[in-house]
Image 1 (cartoon, rainbow, N blue to C red):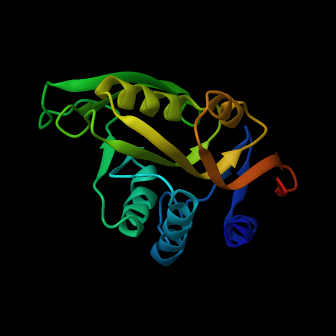
Image 2 (cartoon, rainbow, N blue to C red):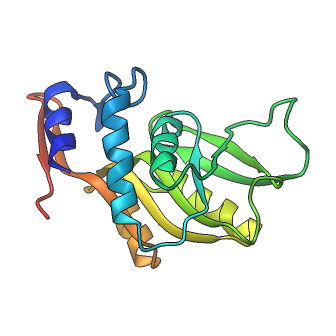
Length: 194
């Protein structure tokens, strides 16, 4: 998605530690119109799949998952919570996810009420680096007996192992932008040419 690459070049900030800050449009302040275009693109990429639910992880994936759901006929969006709260059932699917950005492990949960064996899931997230969050979401779907139909990522860090691991596991993974390298000293971002 060339428009996304241009937006990243214009508004993204490369920080030390291979961190790309895109909070001006994706994960702090949200450019709703632009997220709608990304949702439309995810629908185009996964239109051959039978999708009846979208799964993401809190918090940054929620906005793009909701906009994508609109393009799949307003299917429900389920988001995995990074901690059990008092208002969630005790009947949960549970997995552990290492966060690259926050350098910690989260206990991630989804109520069994919202995932089941009849679900055909499209997993959506904002970033893919090492793949831990996506592998955790795949684990939750497997626990429920559902089917992962595809995985949509806004920005993939192609120089890290996550995308390769997930594709080698046989999942249909589509990333709207794949970054091959970033240089925090000059702010240079190199995108994969596909």
